[in-house]
Length: 259
Image 1 (cartoon, rainbow, N blue to C red):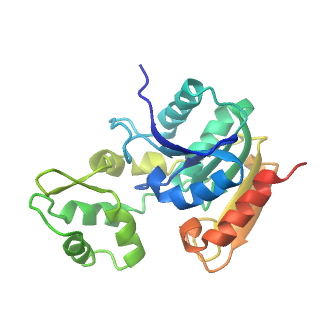
Image 2: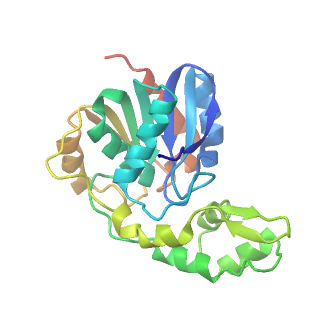
């Protein structure tokens, strides 16, 4: 029996499913989720498997993540959805639209291309594994320890959002860290060659991010013949967090556009 993904649902209207990236969770999107809800969408902030409050499982690849989402939509009787995915969530969205194109009306893919990405997050997982959570500590102390391995304050804050606190005052990791680390190669997989997805799709790229390069544009259009690609200035990979106003406006304009 399929286990159900955890989700927070905001608002009423046409369904907008939001899928976070690696080591993210639906709650990372709550501010933007409320804005979308205020524009007449029913927003589903999903925790993908092995993340947030969703179930842990040893299997972690796009095939099972697509089926997790399909089960969620079936149980909630959702069709004709809009799908927004960042990074790993964008890859889940692409693979979902490839398998179930009739369920997806529009799709927004945030700062990820349909190509293969070699594992490049190992330094984050190695830093996580070096943190000692066995005794009660303050978050500030954990961030200071993390700063020895991770220079970016933004990345440190992002990682530490994944901590939960036990009743004895110690912390624990909400994501299934060991499985995610083992699955990095699977999570970098490209879309199947020659696959074409007819869904109206907007790719949003952070101008300073290396995830979508000029040479990737022809691949995007090959897989997504109806793709629009927009670049948001002064933003990196977490474009939605770095330039939320521009990101939201680009997204809403696309979702409300009538062809």
